[in-house]
Amino acid sequence: TADESGTIETFNPTAERMFWFQASEVIGRNLSMLMPAPESEHHPEYLARYLKTGEAHILGTRREVIAQRRDKTTFPLSLAVTEAQLSGRQVFIALVRDLTEEKVINQRLTAQYAIVQTLAESKSISQASQDVLRTVCQNLGWQVGALWQLSPETTELQCLEIWCDSPGQFDEFISITKQTTLAKNHGLPGRVWESGQAAWITDVVRDQNFPRASVAAKEHLHAAFALPIFLGGSIYGVMEFFSYHIQEPDTALLHQMHAVGNQFGQFLERLQAQDALASLAKFPEENPYPVIRVSRNGKVLYQNEPGQSLLTDLEQPINQASQ
Image (cartoon, rainbow, N blue to C red; front, side, top):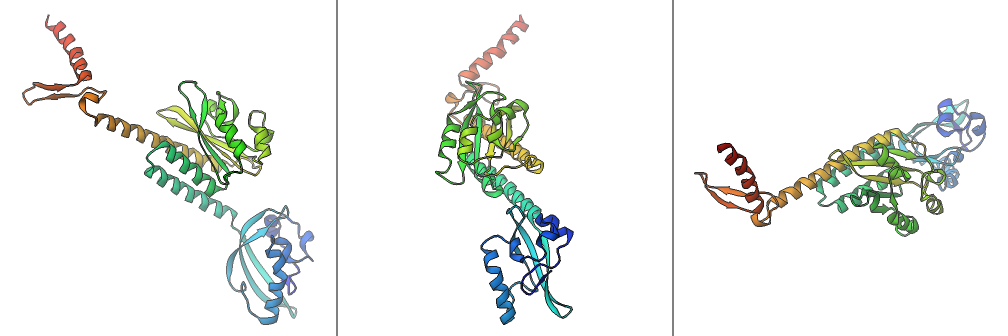
């Protein structure tokens, strides 16, 4: 609760946990300390205008606002304010609810749906990977995403695609990433390749097995996670994401990203199947698979070169058996 000047009078244990303040630290101080700028700067004039005119913009309604914790981090808050008389004084009672978890769940569901749509509509690996990297970064608040592919020639991971939310801001990191190749268990992607499991680094700048640490530090990239992508039971590549912030491992996010990796693998399998069908649709003489046309009475009407080889192979055991 707060008085008519906005001075905090009571602050219950739930509010303490939500804002990371002890009641003794906020009682007697203005409500604006729980708001980020510019809201904190304008709050006193909003309150003064209400007391003068009686025009309420928040009273009696529930609305979403941005609040500020003790460490200056912000979070979404559901706020409902009522007015009351207490011992002849006018006071305001604020009922608040932290919306952080609800927002995160909604953002992740939105990202999951968008990824499913993207993979259903994409016609190429390049298009799909760019769209998936962008969707994850934009919906979940990560700054850089990369797709690493295992090269069959060098048996090393190479960066196939990379996306960032601020073109021009991560040029050096992107350039180094594109030039880098990673062996098994080398760097975050190599670690994921080795284990076959998603992995998280709280701060790549301090990680002993992150070759791009100095460039990441220069461009203010810290937390990172990566997930494996499988094709036909074997590792195809690794997706990797970076954030401005130092973040502890998020098990729920890693679980969701594991599903994204599976979906991308299924997309790759679909592309393979489509390529196989396209190959079968070629002119018979261009088809690498056996093509044999037979009449109703069993006479061979046409056979391409692979088909001829197949028939020859089949005839040999038959001739041997007849002898």
